[in-house]
Length: 65
Image (cartoon, rainbow, N blue to C red):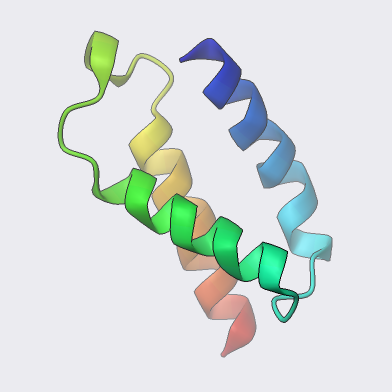
């Protein structure tokens, strides 16, 4: 889970500068949305992965509007 936390940190620092059009970003948004919907994350979500993914995804939606 620590590796996923590091990846989310990298996304958090880069997403304000990403264009939402490329297919890679669209897939990344899909993955973040799925992560935000997970109900059972091992180790009680010690890195707050669900909320962080949800926050990033929500910020992207606001930026697109």
